[in-house]
Image 1 (cartoon, rainbow, N blue to C red):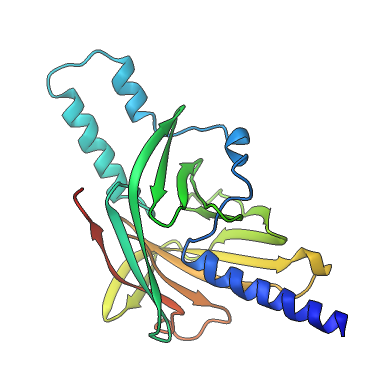
Image 2: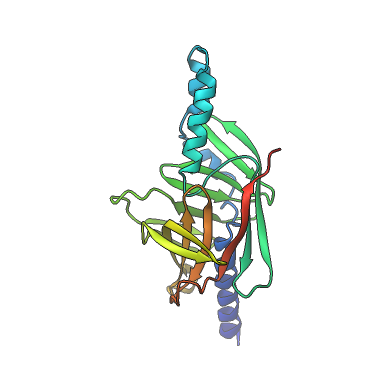
Length: 233
């Protein structure tokens, strides 16, 4: 009986992680992670401080930063929001970036749900207050190897799938999407079944949909984007 109850707890734990990872609501392993992360960002603000201003320079730098955001598979900008709906049409979540802080050479973006996000070496790190970390590779360079890490008793492997695919979401077509494949298993059980899902990211928008494996048709998303944009604060 104890073994049966343990199995049910492990399955429940894996199911909860599938939902949490997909909507980006995962938190940090411990906020001590900030101690070992060696922050390295684009350095736009640092450059602005270290160089003497010339007429129009700051405006050009700001426009350059915005253009980088619109070309990203996970644009980070204060005021940006995303609204998602579960595949069954019931329930969903809204994500919203409410502020940004500079720590060292790194920009940290704070979401309304308590998640903290930053970009490092071609990967997005999503961390929140309740434990766990979600890493999203967003650099489509062909030499990028799979990324392995452990979070909350799960061994997680992230790798890129399709680099230029089309996703249909709610009657809207998103071209040129990047597919990020997540595979994970419970290491506490000494192995166990490996679960997987695909996440699709569109340039200048971010996550547009998630699809559980084994894949069905392209419209059979388990989570989809219903609205997005930027609120001017």
